[in-house]
Image (tube, rainbow over all chains, first blue to last red):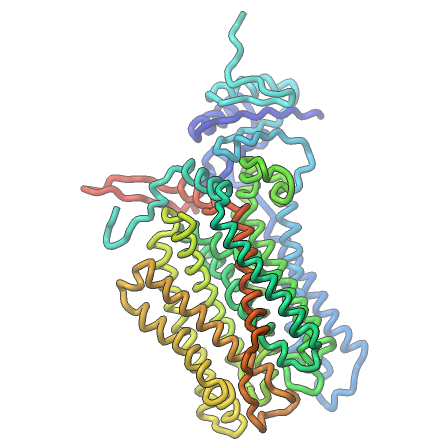
Length: 180
Length: 456
């Protein structure tokens, strides 16, 4: 199904929160719009619920893989090539610990990078409306919705006194055009 | 506004727009002074690189002593520049608000990690194989080279990852708001960052985790390097405390480097509004604590050798503390512990900007002397396969090339930081602004107080 995007640009926090409220009143689900800003706001500022993320799983899996690789390299090589150790244990534990630790940390690091990219949806490969005014301190409310609800989204965004409203076709202005 | 002797930070009086303007102004105003400083530091780095080629590299690896000051440069950068991001992590984990402008000061030193990485790879040739000698590796295959290199590469990767993540939102601001940076490296580094709610939620969590990961790699890396470059190079130096001493003294130097950088930014970078008494005072307390820890770990090691008094232990003490390197040790003791304690124990000095700054400068010099003492001792023993020192080697006196290598490594690191500061805003716009949203001005009886909230 085709998805249309509409981006409302707001100069201040109060207008942006009002826009989020207007969208909800117009029947838009929270998942249908997102807030863009140049600094983080406290959780729940725009009435959003705490979402679930699975970031912690990534370093955990990476650490397990790294540990297993470290154990395989150290233990496996010693067991595969059992050298005469003069009565001492075949497995040399202290250096094994260092290498297993290295493997664990390296695995956790690599998987954390992958986790960040995945959970942040970076790089963004889909289309996304954006405006550089957002990093200048404006707040953007980006609506993704069905084509038939695009005009509803525009009118909801306009209720909160936006600086501008952008669609995939370009700017449609912050206020509705005057009736002829 | 002054209450209970606390100077309330001017930052909390600012509006988010002020922070954005200050950060962008920092990037746009690439004044001649800053450019000149960066070029001088770069020239120093280039001279150091030439000295490294002319001296140790052309001499080869037959005589390890020629590499002593390359190893000093490596270890000193690991003890200062590489330790600074650990401080940032500690402050993030503690979730204090005063740390918001400090984080970037500490984290930006991670950009220099490429220099110790290169130096380490060059120094691998000076480390003998671990068969038939005492080491932490028990003769493990390809030790110490491969496994130390994995640690160093991991640390460098983690450091750059940490710095990139904490800078990502500000890089996007620079990408969008400055014309020259729209294309090229900054746009590439900022990627498609849009500042969506999901991205904010992610980055706030991940930056902390990346910092913790960096510390988790830093500590074992320093532990391994303390044994590879110092303990196992000095026959008879059997100690379990030294790696902890080495790491703790590095944390002390990392805090000192952050304070000195803050003072420079305040004095010459016009950052008085963001780096005030609150930050210097708090870090001064940490510096004092780590100066005491320096003594504690040194004493814990020293007392074992002192009471043991076997010929092996006496020779080690004579070599690194009492005879050969007596004056470097005395200076290290004074500059890392005694003077910081004697100066910072006074409340008016600790509660100032100049006091912690002066002590931080002293600690940086003290740490350098300590590293010169330890590495020179480690690189001056002709036969490291012995179980104890039978003859105490003479002290290694540096030549001009050694001094140039050391100065070049430090200059190169400073140049990297200065060039990075040309594209990275100060203060961190997203972190300081994020803190301002949590602030509220409230009347309280006859005065007005600023309330800073913790959202979770």
